[in-house]
Image 1: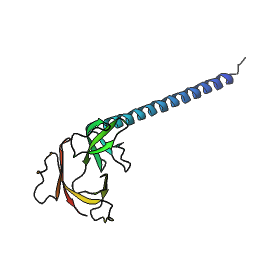
Image 2: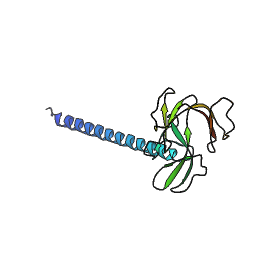
Image 3: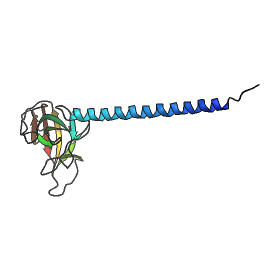
Length: 176
């Protein structure tokens, strides 16, 4: 006498398939939680002193990696409406409660279009032509890791842009 094992085989296959679906759903959930936590960590780090942000035309800072060109390094964080510790900093809103005091994070020998009136920077070619009122085209000739307006060597540019924290000075040449 033989018994038919097909119902048990079908049940086993169904249970294995159900377990596989449950494992897949759990893995997707864990990956989503990890990715969200990593993004929150980057944002939290970016809005602390030493973190990096970009500054779109809206003026509201956005978390960035420090190798993004151009970006800004956070030099100080103040309460909304409170002045930065130095007039050299560029200000940007982090949220409703905080203002970021920013130092440009620029690369030597690169050119940037400095927009007016809010002073945002955009990477540009050094041969770019700008329309009147678009801004000022500058070339960073040297980047020095000191806060000293006199640190630029002779012939390194027209202007020095010193920043207190992080200690940084850009020697620049105005092209347009």
